Length: 165
Image 1 (tube, rainbow, N blue to C red):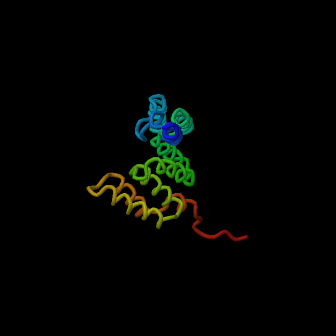
Image 2: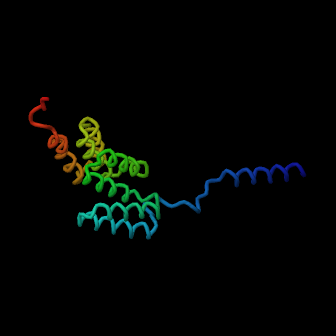
Image 3: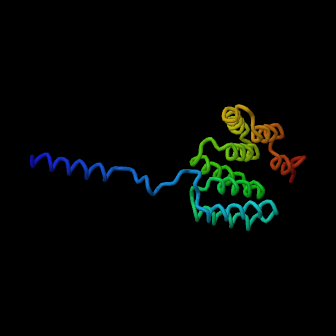
């Protein structure tokens, strides 16, 4: 009888030690209100064309709650407007780690890939979007038109004739 009491205590201790901390975790879509306020402020600044202030506000949103995937997507949008397409891809990748099927993140990432010249990867994003949005969503049309248009920045920077020395 004494052995079973020790065994029961040991099993209880092990199960408590390895139990997941469910009380301290939040769902992906339950971000802290402070983070949401900073993110909305960042969206407004982005719409107004104040890119540096928008990025500051969105980074504050991520500081308040690093699980705010919408802030990652908005930072990617800021990066695209600044022609920082590699950064846009990295930010959307972080958003996709939090929610792999986020249509906004997939579309923004695909647009940045087009600008980088990675059309095949952008096409893979489009196929994923078409699977996710079987009934259609605006992100599919958005990415389709970006792929059809092709990289705009690379075309604008390319000289018409090669330089000669």
